[in-house]
Image 1 (spheres, rainbow, N blue to C red):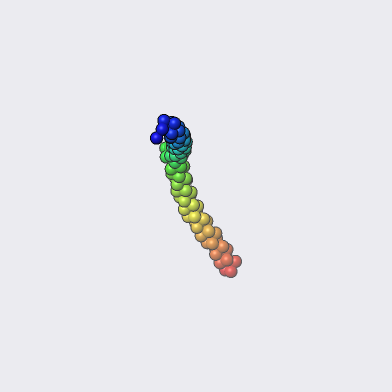
Image 2: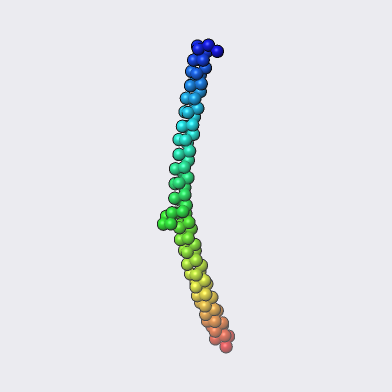
Length: 97
């Protein structure tokens, strides 16, 4: 191999190494962006004050309160309905008798 062929080969290799270096840097940049996005998602999910799990716990507590309220209202409505039925039956007996 002559000196000129050697220099051409080295120049080609240098160009390929530069392209490879550019590709590695591009992959690194994309990896950093992905890491930042994953970190933001992790914060959105696991943040103890405003994260997804905190909001789910809050919603579950509100649902439990609503179920308790519904149970109380249901009991109240049964009592009112029973009382109204008793009054209607009494009126029916009073009118009949």
